[in-house]
Image (cartoon, rainbow, N blue to C red; front, side):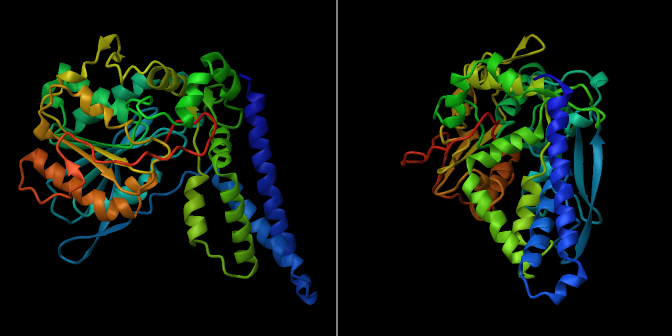
Length: 443
């Protein structure tokens, strides 16, 4: 399956459906149809509008749309996005608030490379920007990276994180969301072991698979069943002729999207059927709830094949992070070397992507980190997205994370929720298992 034609076939299918949508939208909107009292024309036009937008979004990188922030002076301050470090496979970008005194908290958000762009964390960035100086890893779409740029696997990913942390300095508070959690843990441990002067002040690990076997899910079960050879043959393709990365071996974003949608196919089908009806009745809007969600959800990016396969093999199958046997460039990474980096673990009670137990496994790996530097929070009733972008994040988790960062920096701390205890987890109920799916790296 390692050929460009499979990749180009998927792209041809997408472009064809986008064209059909545009054609149906134009046909249904002919003025002459207004002479016939038949709602079929409105339905045709509505279907076309929804289809054209959906298939067009699959190859468009969403905008950040973070333009201003209200500061303590009550004024709107312009947010300027700056590239601090530029690399082939990803940049370190800063959201600089102009005209506002610099905040004490310096936060590096490590975004997932798991099928969606870093803009998936837009609301997380916006919520922290009012109280922090914020940087984020902005990973590039593999289809746009020439083959001449070389490979990019999980060791390369960890090296990028190490370089970004060096760039920002030891006062940085690192916050990793889901897929990058184990690699962030490894990068911080590497710095603690080999360059302690560059290690960050704290790290907050949110819903990530440090030990995928701690609480098995459908994703981890699948990883045990399928062999690496089967996985490579099933999902890996070469980028087609249309893009700058032509010939690069990738796990295509469109293939990942089909996997995402298959996990909740009925829900997505109903959402689009309802949206077509709303558009036909003139109730759909360019920025309505449906479009805000699916404009981001459908915008997928290709991952390099070596990154995807090495993640499955080394993180999920061999459990190198969980067993503390991970290495970078042949140098072993010993997580027990972390002795002063404050660490907070956040899990959602009903997280069906990275189940409770998978992320908190980091606490046992940090065996020489004093208990006073550890925090574990289990958010009652929260699913995966809620712990970094939803109501639970805004109202409960975010204040705790900010207080934790202040503690790590030695600033005055605030009272904590009863759900947070030093080095201990707080949940009693059995976590809900995911409803199924294919071979996706959790977001």
